[in-house]
Amino acid sequence: MNEQLEVVFAPLIGSLVWNVHRGEGGYLTMEFGKPHLRVREPLGRTSATTKRLQRWSRMRRAHVYGDWALFIQGDWKVAVEDDWLHSDDEIVPHSLKEECLLNLSGQRLVSVEAAEDGRHLGLVFDLAGKLEIRPPAGDDDMQWSLHGWDGHVAAMDHDGKLAFEVGEARREAT
Image 1: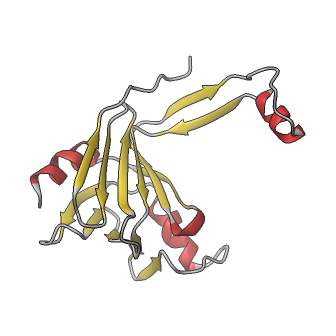
Image 2 (image 1 turned 45 degrees about the horizontal axis):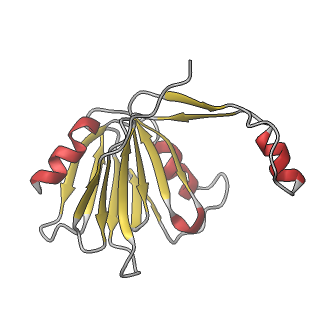
């Protein structure tokens, strides 16, 4: 595997994956490692014109994030034992396809494998879970990005090129 990929994913090996879910447009997100609570306090009065935005600004928001969050924008395929779910598949509630994502949560990441061309990535989990990531159909789209609680980001584009960004660490709620 590419040495840079080994460094990027090394902290995740042995970690639990949790909060695996599919978002809009087939995006897939998942958290790894220790959970952190982040709270946004109410903003108070606002100049927002809609009632919805005014109400939202008066609310407290609490979110749980992992040490690492993996966002997959490329084509992906999840397997748990013999069941597969593809990024283009429709998910019906309580179906075998939905169970693929549910069964991936709670598994430990065992290894990360890259194809020779560096454009395809495979994540292998301890309880027969597998995740394959391929370049997206669009030429300019990112395949995936990995966001650390420390603010660092690693991302791979459709050509298999890695980019890194150093950010500020998030603060946990007290």
